[in-house]
Length: 469
Image 1 (cartoon, helix red, strand yellow):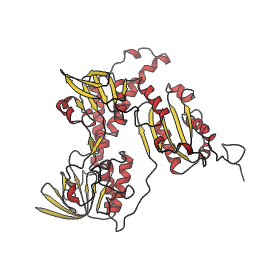
Image 2 (tube, helix red, strand yellow):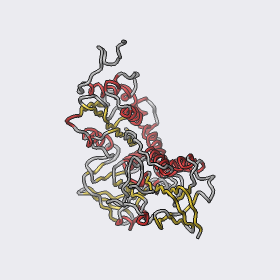
Image 3 (tube, rainbow, N blue to C red):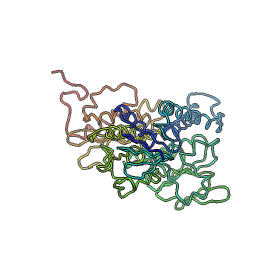
Image 4 (tube, rainbow, N blue to C red):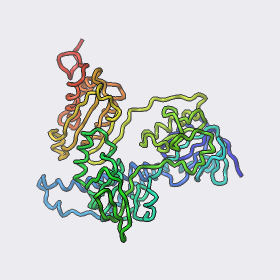
């Protein structure tokens, strides 16, 4: 059996693996990149990009309903061809996947890019197909896959996940969404707006990962107008003729398909990682340092969705860079992680920035908020539903975090994340320019409400302006 010797072996050519590869190449180290299964990254194939294509399509079609306000006649007769709609999503998906592959592995030779599933034989020895690879350092970036409960596998042809949803040739007539996190909400609302009869279920009392009670309450009210939400009970799925019955407590619905959006499982089970000589941790995910990506003090690094820490592309990119750097260095370097930022692309957007509500010391925290109802730009857009909540240290006025559901939230969330990263105070933010009329004025109003509740104030007689010396 052939045996190769390299400085770094990277297992997985998803986002984290490719970013790690960039660092390894730059360091001039010898390497192999190993990938089992489909190429093209989770984001491009089954995640961020096809879901956003579906969301955009659904939002544009749904938006037709407002045309009557403007005196546009005939909008009620508009119809949707589900087959063409899904074909459009698939065409865009294929474009994104092809772009990733052509810019990454397409021109790599078989000596450095190996297609197959790797397994550990010894701490520094891997086997892929008929090749053994001895590596000084190893980066595990194998990603994750959707969770489907074992009892549901008996009718798996009617169970959808993000791995199969975007392969549909036409839209189902009815759909139950079990799990109302990011994926469940995005797909559920989109399908409902495309004419599918959607029902949502979640065992939690909240949706979209929200834990600020005011934002969660508003989100449930708004999203619940698109499709019914049944919360607080575990859903059970049984077969009934050629359909599936989903039952949660006293709620029950008969549907054509069920979308399982119950989270994702790290792809670690086929690596025979027990042969790697590392601490496997209490949850089968190896114990690792989030600032170095190193597992214990070993030669193995963990990056991307496989660690189940921050399953987002920009975080996978950072983790890949950190792992790649440290796998090539004589000395392990710790890096400061960026301000947490998460965006759910439902309409209106649900966003979490910085510290979550559950992480706050409420006795030392001031909270500001604004309701979107009276915001001029939002009213003109017909999108004046939602709430913005911002958090700051009560004494220093330093901005800590925010949760919101509002239009253009994806843009406001970035502004707040950048401000938190710069350790700015509420007063600092109010001295930033705010144009009129823009959605950012809603954020400004929330900041004014917050400013009144913190102790540290701006110098000078005008809050918004710095006095000249």
